[in-house]
Length: 317
Picture 1 (tube, rainbow, N blue to C red):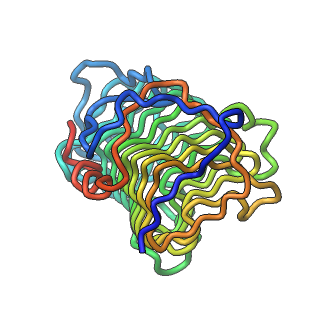
Picture 2 (picture 1 turned 90 degrees about the vertical axis):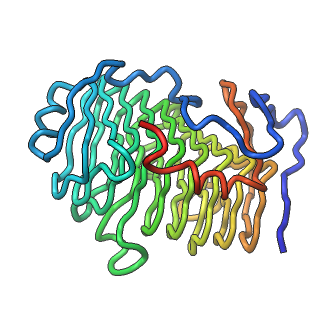
């Protein structure tokens, strides 16, 4: 049975931003940056450098700018991405396997149209550490699925250590234990509080065990996304984090939205106009969040079909 649910909250407790357009159906543009990461320009508009090997990619990253990956590069290891850089893939099948990216103490970075699979052992596919103004768009992030040691790999996308002003859009997260972690430790509030502002929109999470995302201390705006077959937990708000979840669809997701899991202190979550099918929630406190930007909401009733077709690689270049 499908439960169309939204929390009815007192106006004095919560203010909502007005979306740019509340469409009947799903037709939001697939090409364009909105959310907390707005204003990111990456490496600019030049043609940049095209790379076809790990050594070429490593060399190109030393100078930043626009870097285009053509094909799947194997066993590149974890690569540092500098400020003012765009890394983008060609077509539907370009990126890394056996590698990943770290953005540490950098700003103004775009990662786009990349397929990333299986980081090195114990690493993330993408790690943000004191990184600001980042746009992650139309990626395909995965490992080998829910088999073996859940800690052999770390996260698909981890945003930690006071990283801020990040947008994650039109990305497929699938076949992995740990999806996306925002805030790495209950004891890191002195660094993280006031930071870790992230927008997730038009993403597809499938066969990911947990962290869809998991947020500590920060602010998460999650809208028009699809969550399917996630066996342990979905969106996990904790340690005072504030989350607004809008117009998203959850099917077979254990604890689709929770504020009382895994940490010493609960988080806050507001759920509005979402669909839950065999996907219970445990929201113990709501708080308030008004996103400071315009955005286009697509409806939960059609969002899964839409993001399955339009998220991931091969859609934009």
